[in-house]
Structures are given as structure tokens and as C-alpha cells.
Amino acid sequence: MTDADLLASSYARLRASLSSRRDDTLPSAALLSAAESSLPRPDHLGYLLPRGAEKTLDHLHEAIVPALNGQNLSGRYLGFVTGSTLPVAEAADNIVSALDQNVQVHLPDQTVCTAVEDAATGMLASLVGLDPAVWNGRTFTTGATASNVLGLACGREFVIAAKKAGASVAELGLLGACGLAGVREVRVLTSMAHSSLFKAAAVLGIGRASVRQLPVSEAEPWRLDLSAVEAALKDEGVVSIIAISAGEVNTGRFATVSMEEMSRVRKLADRYGAWIHVDGAFGVFARVLPDTEEFARVRQFADGMHLADSITADGHKLLNVPYDNGIFLCRHKSMQHAVFQNPNAAYLASGGASAIPSPLNMGIENSRRFRALPAYAVLLSEGRNGIADMFARMVRFARRVAGYIRDSEAYELLPDGDATAAEFGLEAVHIIVLFRARDERLNEELVGRVNGTRKMYVSGTSWAGKKACRIAVSSWRVDVEKDFEVVREVLESVARR
Ligand SMILES: *Cc1c(COP(=O)(O)O)cnc(C)c1O
Image (cartoon, rainbow, N blue to C red):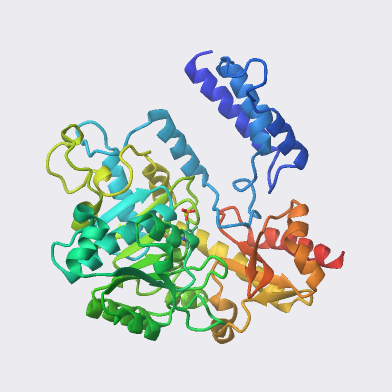
């Protein structure tokens, strides 16, 4: 077989087997265990002996593929926040593998890949209503976790240098810079931050214990208490990064709810030399929803992000491009470069001065996948309106399910005592629906029972000390009417048993 035949036949086989799996959420237990027992083990005869490409592909298609879940096959894989992959993005991703570009150094005489990445991040900034000329520190990352590391790293550099010029963590290290600036603690002030923000703090020497949760109230723990933020900013010898959770994973709610609140945050940051990082992994895309009454509230919650210093977004979630794809946007390009430059590597110099920085100087990695291309393809193919429609469909489906749960006898819509929901009703729902069964026994088993139907997949979480169930709508495939009917049937059948 030629290379081209091998690839074409593998792809044809894949498409054929997937076409019979439409709407699967999870593979059966039998397929999972068959796949697992087919994996090579050191005590197996022939371990690590070459099988050849054709036999290897037989194994992949016969054993592995059927045991992969249906998050890209069904609009009812509603766990975590996963997204699916738009067909145009999958096609682009195949091109990425076929040409295997290394997007680290800007080499305009050799390849257009860095220019494509720059165009794509510019379009993304513009999509979410930010001026690409102002948000000129832009890069693709491996995901929101990596983008949060970038955001806190830039913030850490900025807030310490704001205390004392020349106190650069990138140059002197955290201990050296803090010593020079008389800083005893770098803090992250936030509310219901995503777990990855604690990880970022751990990795960067800020420390998980320095992430302070400052919630408005027990009933609305995702909202940031700005008076508490101000009090914390006044502490002597402490510098702070304010991290806005724009889209909290359990509830989908926002830490700030208006332009007015973000303006207050900006004023505080300016007065006390703080940095504002927005974790908008999925929430930032609320800004792209159609500008109509239907989405006015959620758009308002996501307002004012242009006042931040850095923003995290995820491509592999709502934008429906394949893993791994995150985006980092920053208003301080030269500072981002100061932190992430890959210094003193003459052989990695780019071809002359250019407005496009080499990506290896703007983020964590040196060698990098051309992960911009699938995002670029989605932006071109769908455009602003197509993407807005896709997001609108997700929100409508989430609200349809939320409305059903709110009106049902068996289930209770969460969060409890939510003043935002009391004020705005379902208009406050973005793409996440949190709920529990009213019957304690059913609630204990709810997630397992729902997922056991294999007609939909949900995540378990806990809310106010009790188990809860969470639906996150993030696939372009979701069909508001058809998928809602299935979800309603599943939730009703589970409650009847
Ligand atoms: C998913 C998510 C993350 C982590 O994103 P990865 O892409 O999995 O690294 C961070 N923050 C928020 C708000 C998220 O939803």
C-alpha cells in the first residue's frame, strides 16, 4: 500500500464505523473491557515486536476506536465542558498532522503558519469584542490551564515590578524580586476559581494558599466581593492579581455581572497596582451571543472584559475545535515577551524584524503544534454570525432543560437562593445547568442512573454539601428540540424507577 492509500483507507474505515455510532454518548462496558484486554503487556508474546502499519490500523479500528466515548458524536454528551469538533475543524486538523509544521519561530520565508496563527488570534480577539491592536499579546496554548499559567505569570511580573522598578521575577526569580521590592506575599484574589487557577498558583511559586476566595455571599459564592477585594489590596507588603471567574464551572455564573462592576475592579487595580486576569475559558464566548433581548443578561454579565489585563479562553470547548486548543490574550505584549522569551538561542532567531513575534517567546512551549489552523478554519467557515448562532443554540438548549427542571416535581434547579436567578430567571442561564433530585435516595444515584441509560452523559458535582448533577452544553451538534425530548424522557424515566 502507498502512504496515500493507507491514509485514505484508514479514514474511510473510520468514517464508516462512526456513521453507525451516531448519537452514542458512551461505549458499552463490553467494548471498553475488550479494548483494555487487547492492549500489549510486557508478559505477552511479541511485546514490542513490529506489527506493521496495516495490522496496527486493524487494531486501532477494531479495538480502540469503538472504546472511545461519543463526545464528538452526540449532542447529548453533557459532561464536563468538552465541546465537539466541527467537521471543518477536523479537516483542518488533518492538514495540521499531514504537514506537521513547528510553529515556534516566525520564519516568513519558509512557512505561512505563524502568520495564520497571528491572523487567527486577531480574529478571535475581534470575535469577542476586543481590539486586536490593543490586545497584541496573543497566543494559542494547550488549553485554559496553560492560559491561566500565562496570565498569572504576567500578573506576577507586573505587580511586583509595580512596587519597585527593576524587580523582575523573570530575571531575578520570585525570591530575588520580592526581596528587592519588599513584597512578602503575592496573592490571587478571586471567587470560586477553577481548580486550574490553584494549579497555576502552585506552579508559579505563588502557592495555592495565596489564592484567596472572596465571595459576595454563601448563596452566590461565584460572585466577587469588591469591598473585600479592596480591603485585601490595602494589606502592607502584599501585591495582588485579581482573577475574575467569568463562567464558573458548576453554575456557569460570572464573578462580575456588569460593565459598572468591571470598571470598579479596574479602578481598584489601578489604585493599588494590581493585575486583572479573567478566566473566561467558556464564559468569554457569552460576548459573542446575538445582541438581542434573549441574551442581553448573559452578555451583560460578560461585559467589561476589555478592562482586564489578560484573558483565558478555550478553543476546544465552545469553539468546537479539537484538543488541545487554548487561547491567551494580553494587553501587555512586551511584558509577556519579557516573561516568556527563550533567551540566547541564536539558532532560533526569526527572519528579521516583524510585527509577528515568534511564538516561542510568547508562551510556555518551544516546539508547538499548528493548533491555530482548526480555529482559523472555524472562524473563516462560520464567521461571526455562524458562531453566534452556534452559541445561541447551546444557550437555548440549556435554558430548555433548566426550564423543565425548574417546573418538574422530581428535580430542583440549583443553585439555591441565587439572587441573580431570582432577578433574571432563565435569562441568567448560559450553558450550564445545575440540579439535583428532590428525593434523597434518587439524588445519591442520579448521575449513575442517567449515564447508565447511555442516551445522555452528565457530570456529578457537589453543591452546598450535597450531591448534584451538572449539564454543560458545548457541542455544535446539539439540536434544541430533538435532544431536549431525549433528555426529558431520560430524566422522567430515571425519576419513575
Ligand atoms: C475548563 C476550564 C479550565 C481548564 O481548561 P483546560 O482547557 O481543561 O485546561 C479553566 N477554567 C475554566 C473556567 C474552565 O472551564
